[in-house]
Image 1 (cartoon, rainbow, N blue to C red):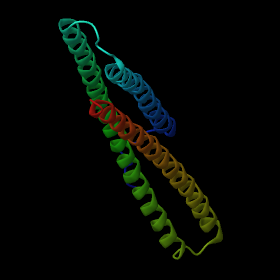
Image 2: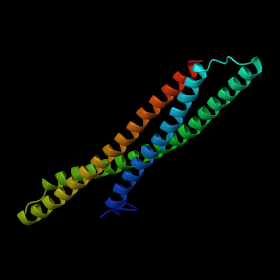
Image 3: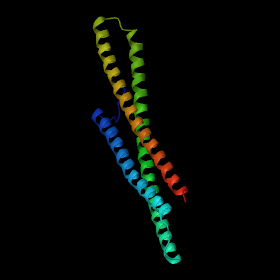
Image 4: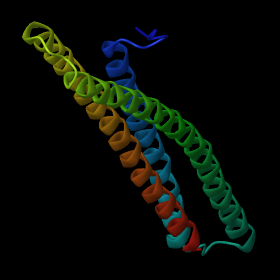
Length: 172
């Protein structure tokens, strides 16, 4: 029998998928707060009348532009964090895909062996093995899909945040 090498336990796979989903969700929520700040500052910028003095209007305008730039800078930093987390999630998804491919290959080998087994007792044990491999395929496929869904949701949110920040800034 070939060595199985350094393979994770199912609980470790589940924990990592859940941790990645939670991290992506937390980062999306943190980005949402900064997006709202950028939109608020831009909205205020568009609404102030600046009816005092020229110097006062310049100071207010500069302060608002600085607040906007700060919000955008914070957003860009958090956006980079989100992208890094998405990359880690995608790497885990790739790892799960490789494990799934390997397990599907094992399943094909079991199917091939079934045609060469002649005794009922051995065929029965091989069927039990096939059931175990099928459960493993289902587990890996489910977790690969969950990993992908979490990452894709994060990407959709990130794209929406980018759009909103750009829209707020272009309203100048």
